[in-house]
Image (cartoon, rainbow, N blue to C red; front, side):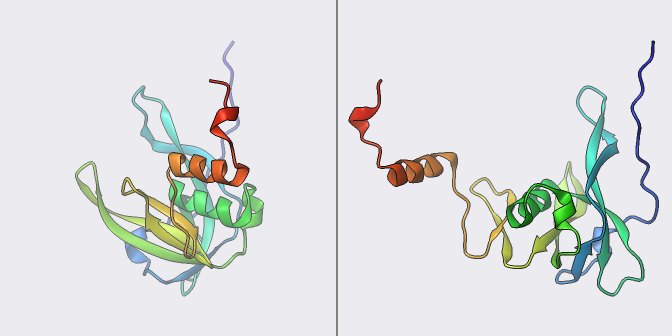
Length: 157
């Protein structure tokens, strides 16, 4: 017996990152929903992309945007993990020219007010609260140890 899953088809125009000017204000007007992308993973299965309808300042209609992981993580930091809570918040579009698999592309980031896009220690883009830096897992553990004032003699090994 064959099993099927319901699929969602996204209708409407898609944003072209190269047409969006850095600094443009935007807001999500729909929830973010995962859907199959046209790209495949190493096993030949369709990868998923996280898509939302976004209204950009100065554009006549909302367009579909596939949100990258940096944008999603920034939205989670700013507004929590439910994408319903991300809707109608003022965001700033930031674009960056880069190469992916040798091809020139433009990445689009949507950044909440009071947040910045910075590079982590490995050069990956992350979106953090203004003035914050990205901490490595070791730095996070060191901070927790200081907060909890763990005595090394209390560790059982």
